[in-house]
Amino acid sequence: MGRARSDLTIVHYSDQNGSWASRGRNILYASAHDGPWRVVARFPAVLPRDLLAVQRLPRRWLRSDKCNVRPTRTGRLLGLRGGVVYRLEPDTDSAPAPLAKIEGDCVMSRAMAEDEEGNIYFGEYFMNGSRIPVRVWRVDPDLQSCECVYRLDEPRARHVHAIHADPYR
Image 1 (cartoon, rainbow, N blue to C red):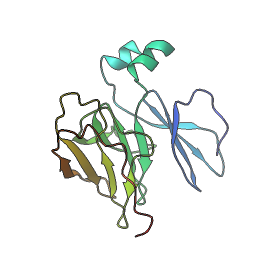
Image 2 (cartoon, rainbow, N blue to C red; image 1 turned 45 degrees about the horizontal axis):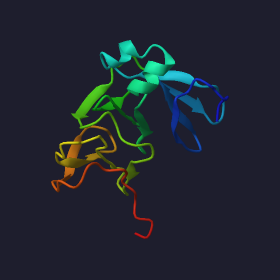
Image 3 (cartoon, helix red, strand yellow; image 1 turned 30 degrees about the horizontal axis):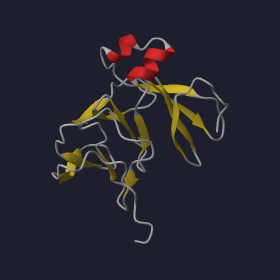
Image 4 (cartoon, rainbow, N blue to C red; image 1 turned 90 degrees about the vertical axis):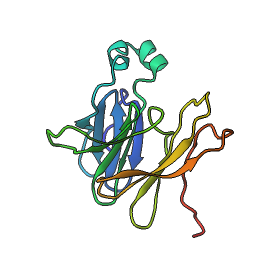
């Protein structure tokens, strides 16, 4: 899926059409059919974290590259970075549209699930030392809304590692 690229931080999603990856604030795409990696969108800056993460060690320490990117079955692109859920518009000059503010920067890799209707679900993943409630979110397939669908009020719940579809359903 595209040429190998040593400066990618993470490949977030791959299917028969191509792969989505990120490096810093840049979102990259490589078509499975014809191409090298190319920058297709960019997350907004998270200050001061992005200013301090110019070199590798501060970038790793601050985890400034941490984000999530996932396409929907309707062809939209969902992004999470810096505690904000975004609707991304690849290959346009449109700024990412914020949909919701969540606890934590983003979610663990491969921690999102999609239902039969194309809704995407994810849980909040953050340190949560004070044990505040943790939420599970649903984003509609067209990325028009993001809403809390479940709230874990139990103080023993620290965060959600992942949401997975039931393979036997």
